[in-house]
Length: 396
Image (cartoon, rainbow, N blue to C red; front, side):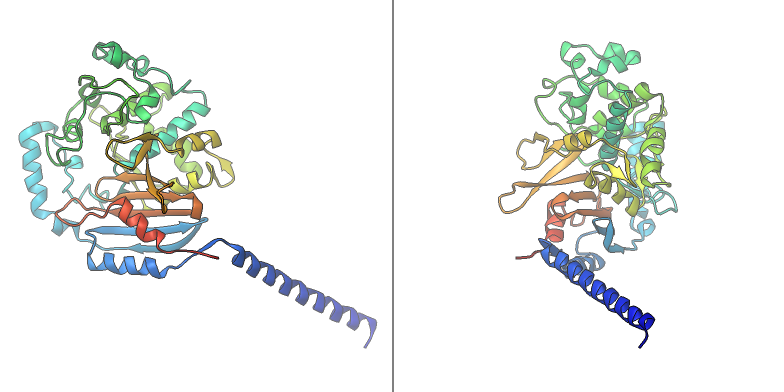
């Protein structure tokens, strides 16, 4: 054998050895991981969704470390399902609101819910609030908003007369972000299809800002959590006043395009304000991109979209909620999990079953879209997250 052949043989063995060594290292890295996912549990939940065990579910997506682990979609004939209720709800709305009643806030109208027209864009309802929160982090970094401790009345010159008390004048942007404004509001006693629900009444009024600010104060700002969709409408107005762009346009420019969201729809109020409290529609995968942004400390595609400080502030468990073990902060929910419920799932939650969950401990982003507004079982975010967490197998 000549020297050249010997060299080739030597190189071959070096390459083979290196390959085996890398394979061993990869295997060791896998074995060193503290957990793994058993997707059998996801399949079990998927089969239950197919059988209709949990009402009307439209999509179920699990992403771990940027990789899609599980992805399923479900066909529901909403046109047939809502046929009678659509007209019934329309009559109720017209009776109570007259010409102000619109199809886009008739939750039984299949042209608007849960999908926008004939697209794959699904309503995310109140997770629109969570998306809006991210825009405040961007505006703060860009210097368009000086501080979240700023009092909000400065942004409402056309509504100055409605700030009729010292308490109302002391409301800050942070109070709005944490739902601790102190404004009297009832969104829980009656369903969203009932005119006695403040959110429903607001959505069928002409000037939403006037509706909210006309209400009296009930608590000192910052002292008590009261869920109030009107609060995010005020945030929409503030962002528009501060930046000169609507929430939708600002999101498109500084959030959606940078993270790869190209298609969306966002409702407007009768006065042209972006409906930041519940009007955003996204595809399931684009919905997940919002969660991935927070999981990755505000980075997407190598670009810092949200500052680490803002992400850290937002993902810190927020204010306590009376008679609940959940917390709330910066337009996001915190759902406890773990043996002693000492850990938190960072989550967005929207009417009808729109859930976006971020579990940093396991590098997970989970999305559920559905439309459980009918007389069916409505799985809670606690239930669905517990089912997903069953798939986590801790390595010893």
